[in-house]
Length: 147
Image (cartoon, rainbow, N blue to C red; front, side, top):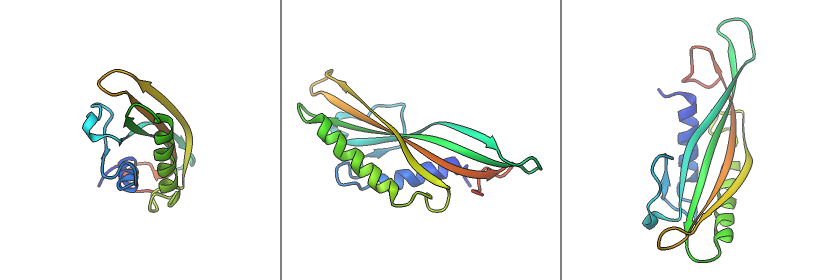
C-alpha cells in the first residue's frame, strides 16, 4: 500500500481527470513541461508537508498538512486570463465535491492562486497555479493508513 500522501494525490488526479476544459490531459509530474499539443492541461504534484505530533504516547498521532499544486496550462494569443479562470473554477468545484478525499482527509481547502505568462515559442503559454491544502491524520509507524 502507498503512503496516505500518495493516495490523496492519486485521488486528486482522479477527481480532476475529465474536467470540461482539460479532459484527460492530467499529468502527475512537475519535472517535464507539458507539450504544446497537450494543452490545455493540468500538472499535479505534492510540494510540501508539515507534520505535527498531537499525542505523546507511542504510537503517536500525527496531524499532517499536505500542500499540493495544480498547474493549469493554456496556449493562445488572447483571453489567457479567462481560460485560466474557467479551468480554476472547474478545479475548485471538483475538489469541493468531496473535501475528505474519499475518507483519507479531514479537510481540503484552496489556499492560493498565482498566474504566469510566457511569450516564448510559437504561441504564448499561460499558467495558473492553484495551491491546495489537504489536512489528514496518521499514526506513527502506519503512514499508509489514514487515522
